[in-house]
Image (cartoon, rainbow, N blue to C red):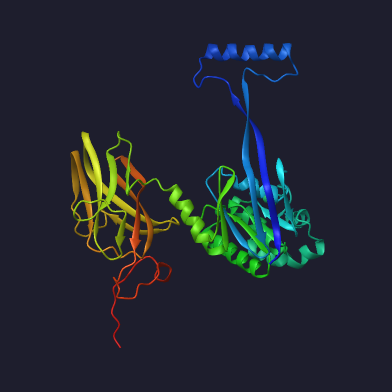
Length: 415
C-alpha cells in the first residue's frame, strides 16, 4: 500500500510563562507587588513585566517521524501531556509545526474537540451543512448523506433545535456522524468519543471499522486500551513529545501499561500515615509471588496499622482488573459466604484472602484493595501486578487467553 501520511522530524514548541512570586503571599505583599508592576508599566509601557513573568520554551513534540500506509488504522497512546493532541492538530492543519514537515495525500476529516466547527446559534440541520462545507464537501454530497447522518447521530427530534441547547453527548454524536459519513480519505479522531455513552461508542467503533474496509485511513487517540485493541491494526506510543514505541497493537499497549504500573516486586505500599499499609500476593509458604500458574492457589495478604486507633465494622475488598481496565473479579468480605465479620481491628497485623484455585486465564492483572469502616475509606490502586501463567488446569490442551475470556470454568461433557 502507498504511504498516505509521512512525517519527518516534526517538532512543535510553545512559549509558556511562570509567575515569579511566592506560593503564599500576604495582602500587603500582594498590594506592593501590584504597585511595582503598575509603576514598571508606566515607565516602560512597551516592555514585558520581567518581575512577574518568567518565559520558558516548552517542546510539545520533538523530532517525530513516522509513515502511515493507506487503509491503516493507527492507534496513538500515551499519558496526558505526551503530545498526542498536538500531533493531531498538526496533521489536521490546525497548527503549524515549529520545524519538520508532513506530507498528506488525501482529504482529512478531524474530530478533535466537542463542538469544533459548529455554530451554537444554528440548528443541527444547518450545522450539518456548515460542518460538511468546512470539511470541504459539496452541498450535493452533504444532501446525499443527510438522512444517514441524522439517523446515525440519533437527533431526529432535535434536528431544528439550536445546537447550543445540545448536551455534550449530542454534540459528539452529530460531529462524528458528519465526519464519518462524508467519505474523507483520512479520519482523525481524538478522545472525544469518551463523552458518548457505551452503546454509541460501540456504534462508532463499528463505523470506523467499516470506513477502514473501504480503504480509508484512521488515526485514533484514546486512553481506552480495549477500543485501541479492537479497532487498530498498528499503534504508536508517545512520551514527552517523542515516539518511544511503534508496532503491533498488543506489544505497544503492553509496554505502555507496564510503564504505568506502580507495583514494585508484586507489592505496593500506601502512605505510612494510612491505616491500610500494603497488599502482596504470596504462596502458602509466605513468599511473595509475581506470577502463578492458572488454577493454582495463593493468598492476597493485606497489611494494616491501627496502632493509633481501633477500627470497628471493617470491610475489605480486593478487585482484579486486566491491563485494559476491565474488572475480572471481586473478592470482598461483604460477599464471601463464610467470611468472618471484622468487628474491630487494633494494633498492627494483616488479613489474608486465601484462594485454593485461581481460575483466571493466562495474562497480566492489576490488583486494587480497599478498606472501609464507618465514615472512612482507604485504598491502594495497582497494588499488585500479577502474571497468570498457562497450565493444564482444564486438561493437557493449553488454550490462549483470548480464546477463553477471563475465567477458566471446570466442566464435563457427557455424550
